[in-house]
Amino acid sequence: MNARVFALAGRRPADATCEEPAIISDFTWGTGTGLDRIRALADSPPHPLHAHLGLRFSEVEKGQVELVWTPSDAVRNPAGVVHGGYIAAAFDEVCGVTAISLSNPATPYLTMSLNVDYLRPLLAGETYTAAGSVQQSGATRTLVRAEITDATGRLCAQATCAFTPNRKLLEQASRAGGTE
Image (cartoon, rainbow, N blue to C red; front, side, top):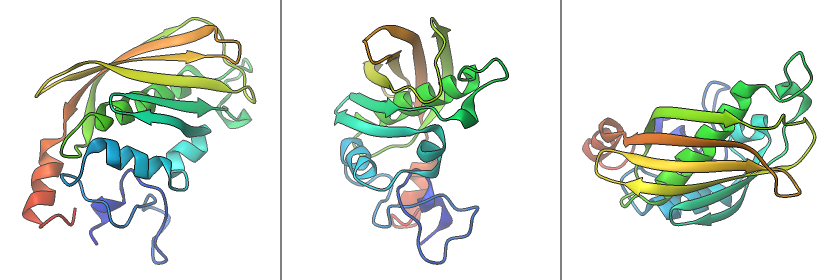
């Protein structure tokens, strides 16, 4: 199995090095649907990035994904609130998996733009909901809108993300016979 297959996944093989992200061993870009891919990811142990950020899947539907987010103390800034960069990373994740959930065949995406509006400070240890929904999907661009709300449903931050399909990775997987 090629090391590129290790991207965006849920568990490590016995021979994985610390540089290799976790994998879902039977997954190949360009096979199955994106919804199947994201559901498999949701049913697997957390990807290291999701574990670091404190993200976990709660709902996965075609074009709509919801993650539960409990930021840890490790993502606080010197002022004591969750650092805006981590909020942006959480948005990039929820928007990215939302875009992938709509693809057929399963297609990885590259972030073209990310715009975040920070409305309320987020606190480490509190639980938030990060929900994304596809607003527009085309051959070269997918636009996703997302919100982070607190336990009472108050809007804390919102974002829009534009993605483009990573055709190079799909072509590599196709040339390799589905092993990348």
